[in-house]
Image (cartoon, rainbow, N blue to C red; front, side, top):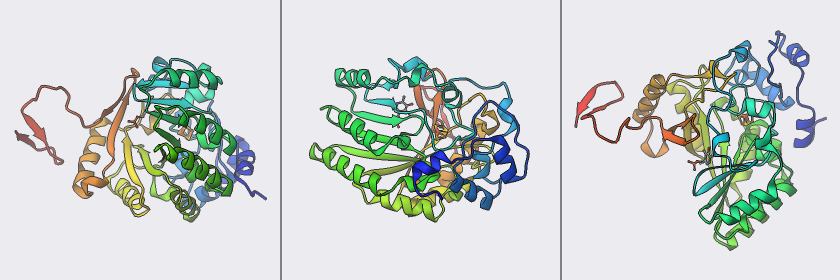
Length: 344
Ligand SMILES: *Cc1c(COP(=O)(O)O)cnc(C)c1O
Ligand code: SF4
């Protein structure tokens, strides 16, 4: 009997033979690990192994393709020390853990996570000192791995230690946990974050959750219930999505997801262009195709509902809007969603 989120983690499917038996299909060998919690597996079987839900987590032989980059967004380049990526002066990314509640086949950190290297070496005290020494840091972003793989006690202690730094105004948690193991949002978690938000609000500080979600079919009743609980906390809840080939690379699919998020009162924050990651190139979408989809979304959704379509460039210099001007000097024409050019 699986009764807690820790049990879900302990009893996840991790062996190719076991997975192969469950889905009655051969599992191609590749070097990336398999990790699928049982309750997620049940949802995948309901949707189908080749559905938008299934393809995100079932291994594929395409993961052996040699194309793509090991570190596609240049994390190493902007890392002053292990566990920290400091790319934008105002906010620093804290690699709190290398553990995830699932193994996403498209993951942009799949190579780094496969051989947890220096980037993930425990370094909490030095990170805290670095943050204290950099008054320009307004926000600490818990990333990983999935920060909600940490125990409640750790989340509280680490969260509070950052919140206690005077210039840190925001704590942000990027997570896929409410989607993958909704039981994670249990009574103890809610109490922990009630305490943490209370501590934060005494100093006028805010806590933000960014839920990673790629398709409407991820949102079954258990997920919605977990997120409803999260919403009762005094936190801001956002969502972000990666554009993925044959998973969500259609106007209808994205519109479906974004309007569902809106009904749940969750703002869709970023639509990420896929990274050119080694082992995940079969999910890659051409920039031209992405731009066509995004400009059509602008036709079909209210402007305030649209996420920002963004690219992380490989050189580690960070995010650039995927629909940006290609130079500061103006060419003299603008293009609409049909491709027609307009003089301006
Ligand atoms: C994406 C990212 C952030 C956060 O950027 P926002 O635009 O504030 O969401 C911060 N640091 C690093 C290293 C990142 O990759
Ligand atoms: S949860 Fe995020 S970090 Fe973990 S495998 Fe999935 S995409 Fe990668």
